[in-house]
Amino acid sequence: MSDPSPQAPAEPAPAADHLNIKVTDSNNEVFFKIKRSTQLKKLMDAFCERQGKQISTVRFLFDGTRVRPEDSPDTLEMDDGDTLEVHQEQIGG
Picture 1 (cartoon, rainbow, N blue to C red):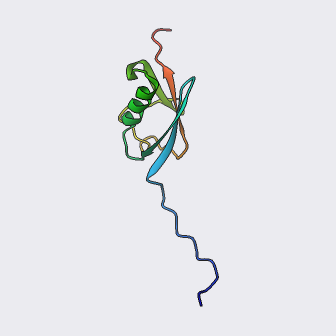
Picture 2: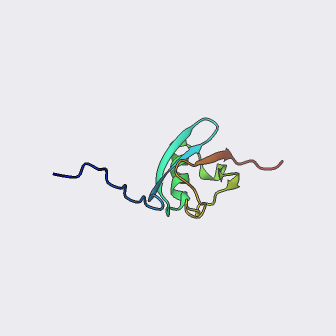
Picture 3: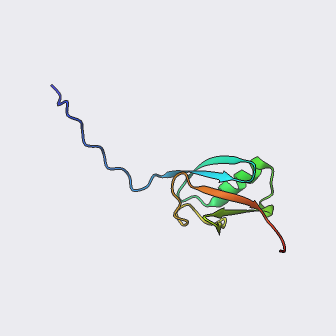
């Protein structure tokens, strides 16, 4: 007969391979699932394509800091469920 006692849970991985990232602008929320090592340029391009915006007209921010296309979730120390904000680029004061 098998032992009915519950097994010890396996140790969780230190960090999941993929993250769910929410990207919000003034009208929309779009969710993306990306690898921690993926450059955010892919996510930025996909968001702009879905929303019909040109990447040169918007800025992406994480925790108030501008996100560069070559950044990745790892370099920004993002966690699952974090949000990127999208704002229209403003020129001048």
